[in-house]
Length: 90
Image (cartoon, rainbow, N blue to C red; front, side, top):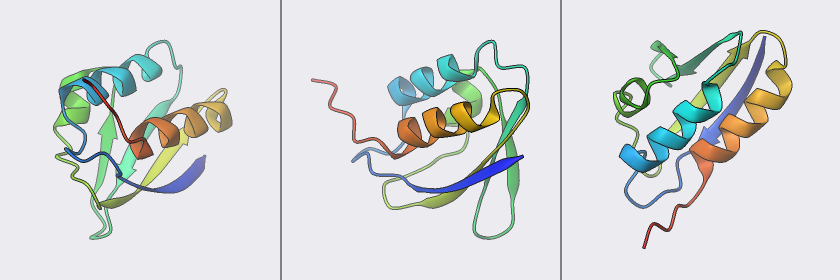
């Protein structure tokens, strides 16, 4: 199991488009992934954009990503990049 702290940088938070990219990164991953909130809440995420959007992450939120399973280190880095990215969908 690997963990990494990430700050949400996108101006509009993790809305539909970023959620779709994050969900796509989880497709085919044989392990599991969670988002841990500072208040102690731990929420599983899946390869569904709705599961990611349901986290309601806004710019400035700091969360911990947790990944468990085969290839977890690579997957964690990919997810951390996607969660922490500033998106420019123009």
